[in-house]
Image (cartoon, rainbow, N blue to C red; front, side, top):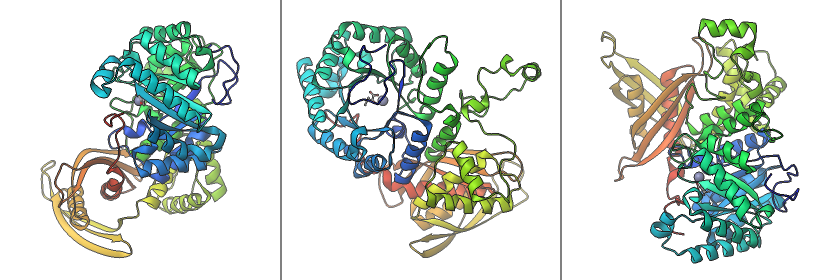
Length: 543
Ligand code: KIV
Ligand code: ZN
C-alpha cells in the first residue's frame, strides 16, 4: 500500500489503496515512436477508445512541442468525459503555462506532468546543473503547476540511474511543493525487476511525506523488462503504472498496457486484492486501433493481442484444448476481446447492429463517423459475403483516416504487368493514377519494377515527392480470397526539390486489391508528412 490516506486530493478519484491507476501515454511517449505520429482526429479516436477501455489517466501530449500538440491535448481535454487528461511539461514556466492552458478544458480532471532529469549523467551532460539547483527547479516548477491545477505529477527523469539518496531528496521536495503523484521513470530501460522494486521500497521507507503521493512507475523496454519491472514495482507498492497500447514508445517502447493489466489479473496469487479499472474485453479492439492508426503492427506472437496468442497448432495441444481449454490457455480469448472468427455481420445488418458490434469491440465512433462507417460497411458487404470483427475495425480506421487525409485522394488506379517473365525476375509494370486535390484532378503514368513500384512512381510524379520505402507489410484482415488486405508502410519522404534526408512517416491502405492498398498506404504517408515538421523533441531541447 502506497499511502495511509485513502484518497489523494488532486489525483484520480480512486479510493481503494489496492487499485492500480492506469496512466496511458500512447498519445505522448507512444507517439514518439519513429513513424507513429497521429493527427488530430486519430488522437481523438484513440482517446475515446482509451476512455472506453477504462484507463484512469490519458497523457495526451506535450503541449509546448508544437501548435499541433497543443491543439491535440486541448481537444482531447474538451472531448473527455471521465479520464484525467494530462499534459507533459519540462520544469520551465513557459512549458507549464502551455500545458496548463491545454488541459484546462478537463476542469477538475486536468493534470500537469512536470519532469526534470536527476541522474548524474543528465545533470552533467544535458543540464549542466548542480544537485541543489535541480531540487530548487523541481520544487519551484511543481509549485507553479499547482497554481494552475490541483493534480500535479512530477518525474525525475532517469530516476532508476539516479543516486537513491538524491532521488529521495527530490521526491520529498516535490511532494512538499504539492506533487500528488511521483513517477520513478526507468527512462533508458536499464532497471532490473528486483532492484527496481527495492528502489520503490527504499523511497517508501526513506521519504517522510511519501504517504501524501501516489508512487508511479514508467518503464522503457530496452532490455525487454518494462512489464516485469512495472509488475515488480506494483508488488513493492507503486500504485500507478504508465504504459502504452501495444507497448509502443521511444526506442524499444514502453510497458505494454495489455500485458501488465492481464498479468495482474491472471496472476491474482501474486497480486492479491489488486484491481484496475480496465475493461479487458476492450483490449484487442484498442490494440488493433492503435496498430492501424500508427502503422506499427505487432508481431504475430505478441502476448495477449498477437494473431497467434490463442492459436494452437500442435496436435497434442489441440487435443488438450478440446478436453479442457485450461490445459493450454491461462485466459480466454473472449476475456481480452479477441474477435469471434464466425461471421458477425452481413449484407442485411443494419446501422444499429453495426453500432452495437463496434461498442462490444470497445470502439466508439462519433455519430457522423458512424454514418460513414456504415456506408463503407455496406459497400464492403456488396463485395465480401462475410464481414468479421477484424473487417469492422479496419473500416473504422479507414473512415477516420479518409476524413483527415484530404490533401490528395486517389481517384483512379490502373496497373498492367508484362507477362512472360520467370517468377521473381521483377516484371516491368505500368501504372496510371489519377489524384484529386482541392477538387482538381491530375493524371500521370509511370513504369516500375512490378505494379506497386510503378504506382508509387506515378504518385511521386504527381505529388512532387520522393520516397524510400523502409518497411512494407501486407496482412490479410480476415480469411478468404476476398479478404481485405491491409498494407502498412514506413517511408522516408521528402519533396523532390528539397535537400536533406526527409522524414520517416507511416501510412496505411486497405483494399481487397493489394496494389490498390499499397497505393493508398503510400498516399496516406504523403498526406501525413506535413504534421511531422518543426516539432520540439523533449529529449534534446534544453531544460
Ligand atoms: O521516459 C521518461 O523518462 C519519460 C519522462 C518524460 C517521464 O518519458
Ligand atoms: Zn518515457
